[in-house]
Length: 106
Picture: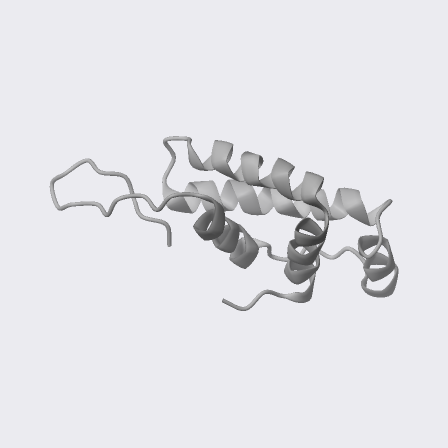
């Protein structure tokens, strides 16, 4: 999976800061535990990641520097959302025809 530069910046930031990483791992698990579809969960996580990026851009390096160079035009965080769901949660069972099993992560 290929991440855009903004997504990669968040991923690297979370990897290099254990407290932030733990916070986001728990956040991802809580969001993933909702009964929503996999697509709706990824969309919610994507919105929260973008909000986090904007928040960090006001105070934290390397986000602040990137925002000064590139601005804060809305950037998709969908690939990062799906990656974090795959890395930090258990896969959902496949849907069976006529069954009621939950969706599997994309």
